[in-house]
Length: 316
Image (cartoon, rainbow, N blue to C red; front, side):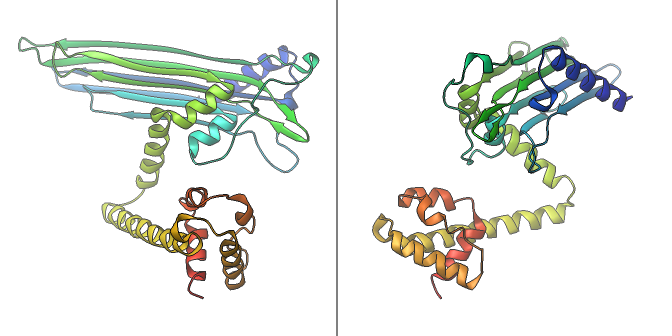
């Protein structure tokens, strides 16, 4: 049943793309379809939760094996009387930024090209949310029905920048929070975003909703398969790694930027020493890719391997 539904969705949107005169080798189709239902009763005590999700992606593979980037996430939380849903959908540079806010990915900054090169693009979302809460004579919630349904679909022809293919950015996110603690405080809060182009990339970079969705989902997915003891050990290892990274970064910065001013000569020499001790451990382009101490610190902040190799080289 699930495989048939996925196949049907992909076939349907592919047909739609073809009917719009978009060549399949130049078009990316990305669709998600989500339904979530919660039903809670106090008399007799019962709770029912249902979840259904379909995701489909059709895209051309480039000659070097690359694929246009997309990301989609769904996070649910809260107890049965406090349901939450957080969902994100992104393509192109916005997808890369959503998954890794520190990336330098970016799409075209302006709209260029001859009019005959223009291709129609479609991006749409539809959301339905319902909430019904019952209370007893003391205004305490004793029943709840919550429904959430959302569809997202994009059909986007690839662009070109010289010999590179460009996948335009779109981003959509929705964040819902239900409050049912008291009769007076019952409510439904919804935050929803829809953006394309540079606006999508800015939203991916600056939206706390997007960052929270991906960081939480990634962390929970990694911890889900661990036992409690393994989780404690993983957290201890992460704390040690963070401490070592901080110490290594301080060592490197004190060596190549004494007084806060970056010494390009020292940085180049340090990179050479690191690669002499461990060939290929540091990208030689790092020396020319940064222009200030702040820029170098930002570049190394999330690169434990490079920072560790450079720190070791300071004492060799």
